[in-house]
Image 1: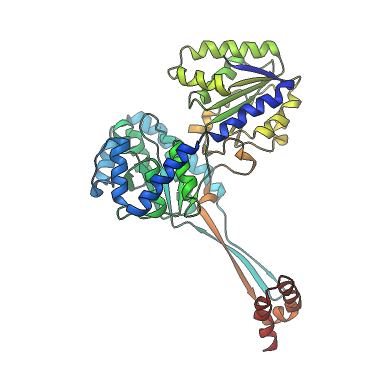
Image 2: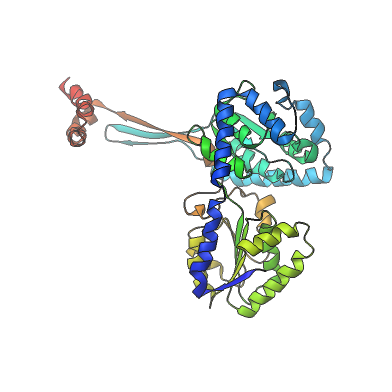
Length: 427
């Protein structure tokens, strides 16, 4: 089932991981591009056509927007105990993200004032998957930081059948006070948010998970609007030793493998016998997993157990992988965290599975994938804020510095730039 690698297999291991980065094939990208262009040109007419084609639901333009009554009716179907748990998770997310706010600042120096103004985006669109896979936790992970940032208009889009199949999505939106909700999904929803239609005004930023077509559409509209990140399939890397519980390792690997056939689960250990114990546990736990077919394909294609001489060698591999989730078990000193340069989220200790971050701890679970943790950060309040520079020079400061500005402008061959300074000195 799952492959076991050693130090000599490093090149082979990374070549297999690299293949996951090209899953949005040319065919998917081309299809998404056609959908996006049709919505840009035709607006609501294209939205309704694609909704009927892909979701088998015939709507009118007036029915695109979900009414407050419909939202409340769907939310009332959720078990009260589940609502209670959801509210606790939202409270934890609020507490965590409030520490991420950035403030405007100003510095003064001889004859000059320099400042940076921090403002919230005017609007943001949240894509919420529907159908067989729906993630209510992603609702608050995307909406909470936007609200804390001060975004006034938060829009949600989701496939037409979402609230019937997953009423907790409606409950999450209601709890968070999101009232502008549209029943449209797929690449066409992304295009509507980016360009606007008669029924759906455009937004400034699009966030939220989706399938390969949604991801391709987000890539297509980037620049017209901002996006959170180009997300790929989920992944986890676990650092363990022969003293670590193999049952925990297997369970945590499966927590990612059940996401998608392209998900990646990797465990490092310092013992070949321990590696075989983990593999045995994977087989045993997989047998009773409801999503076992998907998880098995994921493990077969991209799962791995890597055996190195000792845990000191793990970090070099981890920094190259730059995983979305990194778990470090208690048999490894916590100080190793300081050596990890690239990871979306780090979970330390035998009793900190990444599921606590997915749902309840409060940190954001929208994380960079497929190596992009080298330059992307987890979704946060800062993603929903923009900055403007403010510069103010006195006449005296311009007189003092004009020669330097003039010389630099003329070096670049931009004489009008230079003159815009010297004309003031002449006056």
